[in-house]
Amino acid sequence: MTKTLYIVRHGQTELNKLGIVQGRGKDTDLNDEGCRQADQFYQAYKNIAFDKIYISKLKRTQQSIQQFIDEGLPYEKLAGLDELAWGIYEGQPSTPETKAGFLRIVREWVAGNLDSKFEGGESPNEVQARQREALEVIMSHPEEETVLICMHGRAMRLFLCLLTGKPASEAEDFPHQNLVLYKVVFDGEKFQIADFNNADHLKDN
Image (tube, rainbow, N blue to C red; front, side, top):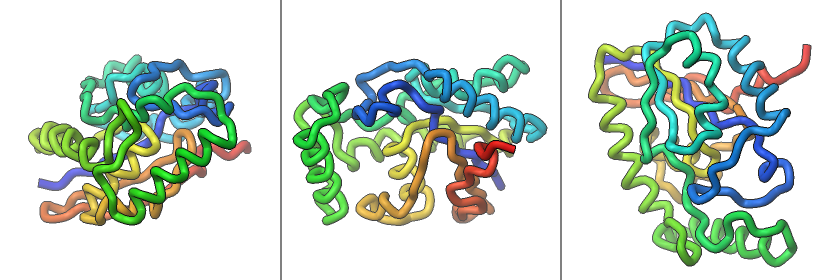
């Protein structure tokens, strides 16, 4: 079985614009810029013959690829694709204190402390546990050869680590912005990244 995964992060939300942490606990909408990004991605990739779309349970992922769904493409929501839960940090104003706390936890993860998490939040190990379940669903359909996946920034980094066999402590090696694309190919044995952090579709002509 071979499979090609087009993995994108959702478009911009107002909390993204303001630099406010949003995770699994914030079901936010795309803002005007996010809707524009969604249209740019659609215009660039509408001719790809996707067999199936997988999105998270959070509406910002569906809003980001709604134009594909409107064409009649089948889609499925998987909780395993949800963003990491940031717990008490979600929705907090962007201040020097919250930024410092965020950086501290990321440094913990980079150091390999992958069970570390904010109060009420999730650790990278917990996120990857549910991502394995989502991946099992996605890979259980060999007839779906070309798949579009829309998910979230931190979760996408951890998912790419899972696919490529990198430790979750190296998640920072996968940069991203809103509606950036990673194309990943499964050759029957392993996953390989065919397109890395592609944002060409977001450039104004």
